[in-house]
Length: 550
Image (cartoon, rainbow, N blue to C red; front, side, top):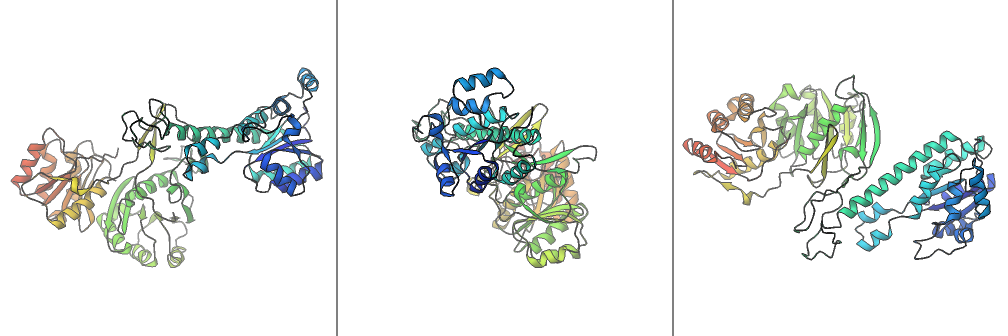
């Protein structure tokens, strides 16, 4: 079929960026008749574009506060009729339906309305009905109709029409149709996610729960304090994802890979996915994984901190008075593993940190931080392959939903963070930890959370000095941590991400000279482990929460 010339256009947009100029070009250059609705019609008329109001086309006024205006056969018949089917065209002629060759529509800003904190009724009114309907009708009939959803497409479409005597090409119409279904899919997914958070399992709408309990926010897995409330995970889940880039390869060169950003992420501003890469080679699949682990770990701490990660495992964690000191101590924990790793800081990076990195002759794959001072960036120009990522700030840990794929499925859970209050901890041994030991234990507990389970972390001076994790049994993790710490383990403290199933793992730490241990407790052999601690004069704290990281 010959590419159709654009003779009639229906325009109805929320985002009016560039729409007046686009409509004017369609009208003046190509003689297209412009049909429009409500506020868009007023904006076009004010810009001097000849406009036919939608009610003049349909014979019905816009009604019900604009809820009904384009849901009419003279709109959808003009979009859906197959131009190559004589019966379709005959029926259209019989009913006085004229063809529409282009639809320019973008949708009510539903997600922005929700994010603004608008009330339930306002969010409902910002669920677009007519817009998605027109988009879908036009996209289904892309053989004859061009459908435009993005203002940034306007110039390219006009250029194509100028080359093709006012027509669009099939290739362009098909690409535009795909954009439509991606757009409506993401739009419906965002509505479903929001609405699932507004309803109890019993179907009670938010704000009317008989238990007067708040409901989980959209996309949140937090369970509200309501006996009728769901966990926050919907019965059906659709994720909106936008490809950010193709990666050179996956974990290995023979694997293809890509990176996507989540459209529904609650706190995108300071996230890894939205970080600005200031310099360096393209990030790899493994870089993203390591950076995510490092960034999640460093966000646990309020004071200046540095985390160095290699192969998804922290090889150095430190909290100090400044980032330069934190880096030096974190690096000293395991200089061999730190070489070729990635680093995360929870404070802006200055030249003092870069000087320390250069003095250590450390090769760094990537560094992520809230910001980089100009002098730090100037120094790193000498190492142009190093990847530097600026987030612009630091989100608090937790508060998001994490996803992991398995064969044929997807796991999701609310993200973990070590936020337990020390006042809720229990000292289970005869000896109480000193004030200094308790401070070190709290650091070790937060740091241990970022190590692969079974995790054991030995700490001194707010620095990890021995890290053992990712082992099938806890006693081997303890042995690795003790071997790495060496003599420095004497007088140090230790954290275990889960309980000791036997006293053997604890005994490894005790024999190395550790003076205090923090762990969740909850083993059937807790009394045996507590007795072992009392035998050796070691203080032990139970948190009642574990922090597995599989």
